[in-house]
Image 1 (cartoon, one colour):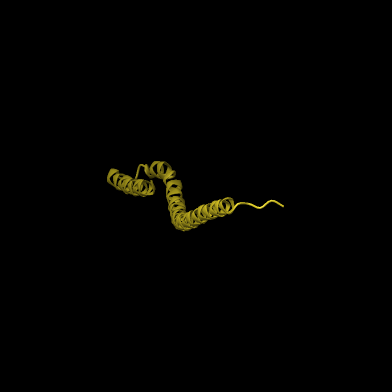
Image 2 (cartoon, one colour):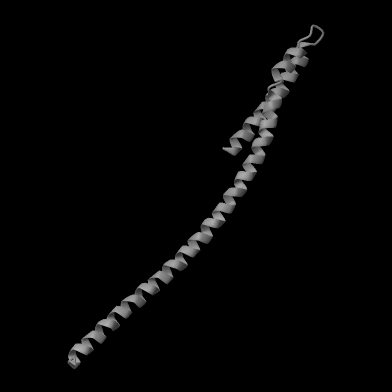
Length: 114
């Protein structure tokens, strides 16, 4: 059986200690990285919830605007139906102005969603 010199044994112990310190440092860094990633994850989840809420809000507005737009398709029919010989020009002008106001309101709602 061969006997290791004491210097050789101390060197091996020193190498093991150095490797252990290195592993501990890596472990500490990874713990900090984990904490950082968990914070980022929580922030991203909060952002995601906010974006989902915005999507629901925009979808609700969109359906309202779509309903108003569908109604606006009938404006031409309504105006042409208003053109009877008995109706006055002033009454027709007032009806068209009301439709224009409604269209402007729809446009503003569309611009708000963009």
